[in-house]
Length: 419
Image (cartoon, rainbow, N blue to C red; front, top):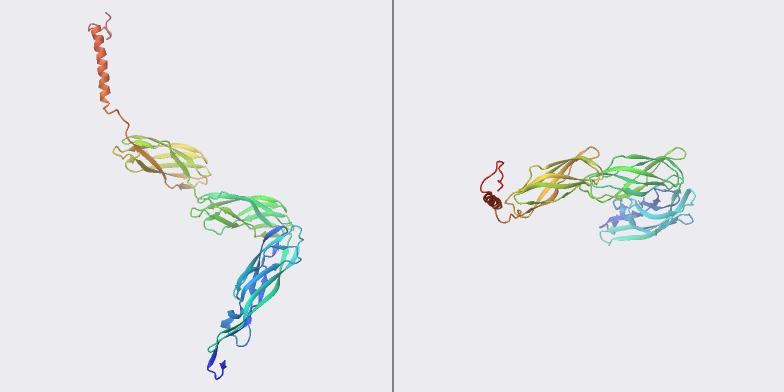
């Protein structure tokens, strides 16, 4: 376009408006439910006007500073969340506004319509030339759209009374109650557990839980392994349920979910020396109490002691046939200390190879223990020969006295002759 003599060219011109549409993709809900529904806000705005440039589409089609409200009106559903601000909504991506709703127990099954109030700003036209300042024509708009919620009689489920013993590096299980919060009975129900995690492994992906009448619960138990690479953090999992309705048709509920805590990794064994002191230059049998600290029995437990100079062991291996969870046994190794050892505490360590309840062989980390080297026992300051010589002298003196009394003669039996 030219202006005046044609020296000035229009560099940017755009004209158009947003076109807002609302959706409620997951609109099925059962009576007696409290939860969140997500209203999607999409924008299909288009350019208008013959001078508009496609490269400037976003300038005039973006809905700006969008605010969304949900109104139940006369519908027997309560909306507990006020107006939500969701920012700008371009034509390239939809956005969501979440609303907490309550559906009373006595709501009849059927389809209910709710109003969605959407307020936003937009630029209707924009022009920027080489000779004039940029100009925009900004407007605001308020529209009302509708979404529908379908209240169903279908069986729906919640996870209650959840418990788990998951721990890093161990197998465990997740247990809980699966409650049918819908109005229809569920037959041949089955839960699926497929965690999207490389460190949490489902030992069984599908677990049958049987029939669950409306309003009742049944227990489930899922075996799980947590790898040694896992972190001890809370984990959230989905628990989809498949079942047959009253007409025998296979149905599913993908909403159930739960969260569990994963505990830190624990030592397989607890070790405690009965008495870890040894005299410098001495040797002794060292008794060590070993406790199974796992939640399962273990067998073929091979222990090995590691000690560095000035400590040494001529018999450093132990063997225990089996230990139940929490059971303690005492193993014995030989221990010696060099005569020139400095009087202080020295580190030693012990590890174990064992077979777990599944028959897998495992090796523990090293468990450290302190060995106290003490002064040799006090011998009174003299050699053991001295008290021995004193004893011999005493015996010799008594013999001489008796010899003199007998006149120096012995009887035939080697005893003393009677006078």
